[in-house]
Structure formats: structure tokens, C-alpha cells
Image 1 (cartoon, rainbow, N blue to C red):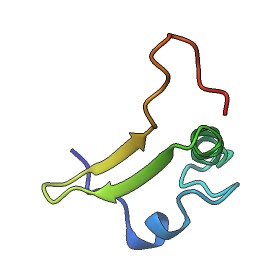
Image 2: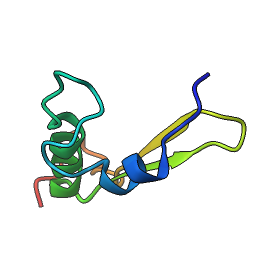
Image 3: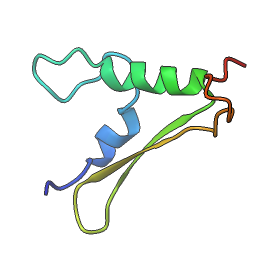
Image 4: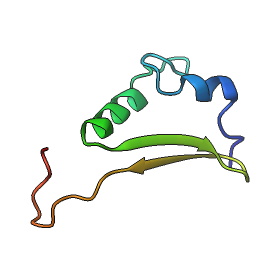
Length: 71
């Protein structure tokens, strides 16, 4: 298990074009967050007390008829 997210990284994590990788594009988390927000969802990142980072995706409950909610 890794050390988690440094404070400086955590503050910029969802900014477009921010990456900690030498050849990273920095678009992955920005795109994921945008998709989730379009569906009234949320993406949250935090450090775990025992080490490592925890990413949580939250989405609203959909309609019970099996079709996606396009509202």
C-alpha cells in the first residue's frame, strides 16, 4: 500500500492536464469527474488513515424500469 496523496497533489488532482506521471496527459480524472457530474454523481478522493488513497464514486439511484435516467 502506498503513502496516499500528497497535499499538493490532492489540491490539484481534478485539474485538467495535471499529472504526476512524466508522460501523463492529466485528463483521466477530469473526464471521469465530468461524466459523473453530468449524471448527478460525484467523485471524491481522500487519504486513508492506514495508508493509500480512497476514491469514492457516488451516483443517484436510477429508475426501476431498467432504462437509464436521462433527466
